[in-house]
Amino acid sequence: MPRLFASLRQRDFRVFFIGQSISLLGTWMRSAALGWLAFQWTGSEFKLGLVAVVNSLPALFLAGWAGSLADRHSKLKMVKLTTWSALLASTVMALLLALRLDPGFPALLAMALWWGLAQAFEAPARQSMIRDLAGREAMGNAIAINSAAFNVARMVGPALGGLLLGSLGAAWCFGADALSFLAVLYSLAVIPETPPRLQRGDGSLGEVWAYLRQDRASLRVLLLLAVVSLFGWTYATQMAAYAKRHLGLDAHGFGLLLAINGAGACLGALWVAARAHKPRPLRQMAAGLALLTLGLLAAGQAQGLALAALALFIAGLGMLLFFATGNTTLQARVPDALRGRVMGLWITVFMGSAPIGTLPLGWAAEAWGSARAIQMSGLLCGLLCLGVWLLVPAKGQAPA
Image 1: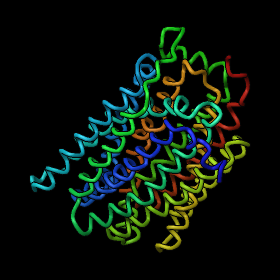
Image 2: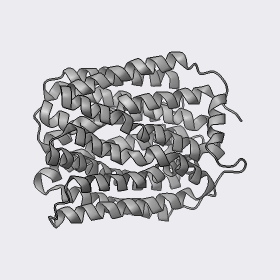
Image 3: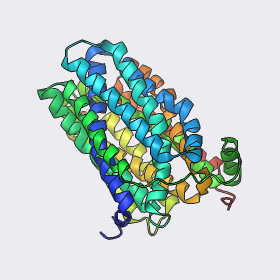
Image 4: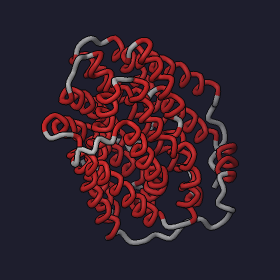
């Protein structure tokens, strides 16, 4: 237990962690409500995927630039500004629904873009802050604990969102999300400012590419992440259709299915946190990829809630075992002066590559059903990751 929560001994990271954990509950309630409304209003798997695409597009085009800004300017101020922007977006959506102004599907797309813009600038700054708040020795544990909090919220948030959707309506989900941002803003207000670490170079993304040419291990992690984001992570965009059309679940069942998937992911993150003092990154990443692939293949075959929940639990476990280990490995190798830009590139491939995989997944789901599409994406994910692992050997050392 002391090793599991070692990073929380640092006061600044502890305050930051608590604020983020509260906000993440609201974020997952909002995500569940957004997907449910999109599918309920349109009945289209493709349009359900389109909402996720629009939400991810800003990361594809802007996260790299945002990472450069994080290296040059105050990360704390960037997170504060983007948090206020996301809070405003959630407030607007809650008011539109509460006043029964019937915003419609185009408004859902606009709001998804708004949240996506805020996240594209917030995520690289927040990720690169972890090293400053927790310290280098506790960084691996802090990243994994942060991932665990993300997935505890992913369990509890959708379950709460499903309850609110079924009893009080979607407006309450967006309103709860807006209120949850206040916890983040309070935590940021009591954390001291850290000066930018960029001391040499021009702050461009070209420096990151030069670094990756020397450090092939980091390059392989990023390529694997891109493949998993394209063909593995995107299964989450079809969960509403999978729950409603394939399994015949209502909003409560949909929330339960997301929560079980998040429970597996939380277990994966906690495993990485407990083993941060004795990491075995290659073994953990390989195990995570294998579990994710097998879980998605099994989910496509499942006909009932019990088997589907078990398969998605395994998929969630594997996904976070891979993501948390990959993030920790990358941040442990990257120089401090490049951290914001490398995390910007991480967010670009993590979130920004999703649109490329989400639309084909939506088309496949409309043609063959969401279950078959999820199964196909799992198979592609496993085969392509195996190809990257074999074709990109981890040669070279990280520059000093």
